[in-house]
Length: 469
Image 1 (cartoon, rainbow, N blue to C red):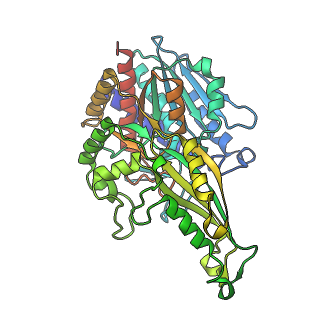
Image 2: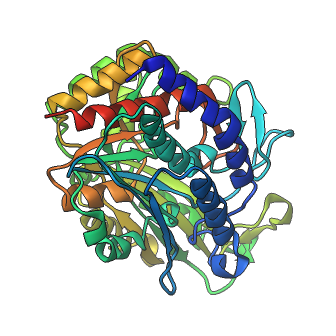
Image 3: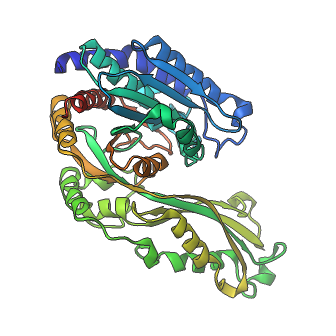
C-alpha cells in the first residue's frame, strides 16, 4: 500500500463527499424504534436509507451489488456485497438508527443541526453511527484506487441497534447464505481512548434494563396527613436500590453480577491507563469538582469495562418542581439500567435483578419489575498475529503511534451474536466515540481528522488480511 496515496484519496473523499452527506444525514431525525414507535409512519428511517443508498450508488465499486431488505414489521437493512480476489469474506458492520434528542445542547448546536467547529462535525448520529457505511465503502474503494487485492467484502447496515438490535437475528438468519462465513469482522461503532492512535475494542459490557413500579396508595394524599404514617415511594425505592448498590461506593452488591477478569485484560488496563492517565476522567463534562468513583485510571477502566454498574435513567409519577404540591405520592415508576460484565449471561442477570427487587418488598408495598431489555456482552478472541501486526502497522502509518487495546463500557448486541455465530472469526472493533464525543448525550460530535485516519487504518487491515497467509 502507498501510504500517502491512501491518505490523499480518503481525505478527499471525506472532505468532498462524506462530510456533506453526513450533514444531510444528521438533519434526519431517524430515531430508533424504541424511541419512535411510529417510525414507519413518520418516514425518517426510509429517508435516511434513501440518502445512504444514493451515496453508495454514486460511489459504487466495480461489480458491487446493493439491496435494501425490508420485511413487514421490521426495520430495514442495507446489504452491500463487493466481490474480492480470494475465497475469504470480510463482514463490515454499522447502523443508521439514532438515539433521541436529549437536552442540554449548546446554543449554536442541536441534534438535527449539523455544525462543523474545530474539525468536529456536531449533530446526532454522525459518530454513532452514521459514518460507518461511508468509511467502510471508502476504505475498500481506496484499495481499488491502488489496484490492491482484497477478500470479498459484505457491508451490513442495520436500523435497530439503538433499540438492542431486535430485528438483527432474523436478518442474520435470512441472509446467512448470502453473507457466507466471514473470517474477519470489522465494526465501526465503538470507542477510542483518544484521537491520536488506533484503538481496538477487546470487550463490551452487556445490559439489562427494566421498569420498577412502586405503589403505596390508591391516590395521592395530603402529606400533612400521610407522611410519617404511610411509607413514601422514595423510601421504598431507596431501600430497594440499597439491595443492589452500595450507596457510598456505587459497587454492585449482588455477587452473581461479578465475574473473574482475564489476565490479558488486566494487562491491557495497565497499558491503556498509562497512555490516558488522568484525562480518562477529566474529559467528562464534570460539574465543578466532582470526584471519580475510583481513584486510579486503571481502576476507572476496570469499573467502566468489566464491572457491573447501575443507573437510574428515567422516572414517572413525580411532578415537576413547579407543579409539586404537598402530597404523598401514590406511585412511581423508575427505569433502571444495569451494565453487565462482558462474560455475564444477561438473561440470567435480568431474572436475578427482578427477583432481588420483588421479593419481600419494604413495608409490603406493591413492587413489580418489568424486564425491558437483556443483552449479553462480548469478550473478543485473542488477536491472531497477522491482525495484531496489521493494526500496529496501520496505527503507526496513519497516526504515528502504536495501536492500543481497551474494553468499552457500552453494548453492541451484534458483537455477541456474531461471536457465537462465527467463533473462528477475528474481530476489528473500533470507532470514533472518544473523549467528549458524547454519543447519546448533547453536543455529540465526530472528530473528522481521526475519522480520516481510522478509514485509512481499515483499508490497510483489509489489505493485510488478503496477505495474511
